[in-house]
Image (cartoon, rainbow, N blue to C red):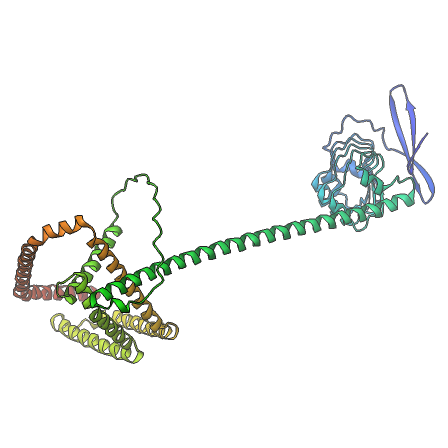
Length: 506
């Protein structure tokens, strides 16, 4: 007879080679010995264990699967026996527990896993909410998962005979009696809770430090951006001061008022940094959008040059442009004031009413003319007209709403002031460019070479314009002569189409 923890095992010899075990369990301080149903010495467990064979090993709420050389827990078969709340899997060949163990066997109260080769406990073991008694004696555990502390009902724990880390071994104790095993359960859970709290605190501190570092980097980036903006603004102000100083100097020289020259704090131009030679990049063909933008730029440039030519009476020298500047400024201010006045709500409403009345009269006239030549088309056109009227009413209402929002939220005075400042800036840059070009001897010699041919070029352009105008007049005369015949042909085709439509409708 061999006595172990809480058990009495009797080994009876049968023959020379076979051994059977008789197991007795202490119940209410009395030892009851009962024989096993069969002599269990199977080959390494055929884990396809039938449900009926497990039911044979169930007595009340106790399921005894000890000493069966089991290498893998038959979770599905055990889950099919919901009455089994006390399971003995001791003295087998288990090396681990599947994750489905705790997920499907949540009704276990008493679990004996002693004398196996289990190396770790699954992290979801805490799902055994009803577990009170856990025997892990003589396994290969070195540590327990932190989630182990979430077993709310655990009252008894034996970790003896495991290669635990020194701290956990000291907390678990020896578990030589009932009181020590109960203390082991309390102490291990408290220890793991403390470790979990410490790890959570460290994680929060780490996150806080990372957050502070990110904020510090963001502040440093903002400071760098602010510094760059300040440097750009200072450079811009410096360039403006230089341009103003040059303009005042030129104005004083022109008007003989050098003594009253306004003093500006001019900072000498910094030396231009030598630009690194960039590698030549082969450009592909221009896209349609590029050509359109180029055309718009050339049109804008031509319109600006034409206006400047008109205002200066053909004198594009520095003196001529300076003399024309007051007229250009006055006309620009007048145009801005007229624009602001035209954008007033009252004027816009009046303009809209005039345009609407004109469109209505034109549409009515066209409609009458169309009906005169094609008879009555109301049957076919009235639905389309109603839809167009509804769309026009919607467009008009939303246009008024947009205009009201623009009037209430946009400061036109600020916009016009910004436009004026922009025009002044471009004019100043134009004067600087003119001065720089006048110093270019090669360009001046080219202009002097071309100037004798100026009258010839103007004469050729006039001839070309006369030819274009003549062709335009010929085209207009042709349209006036041929238009009546074309209208008669259109009327005939429209009448034929109408008859065809009426025939189809009938």
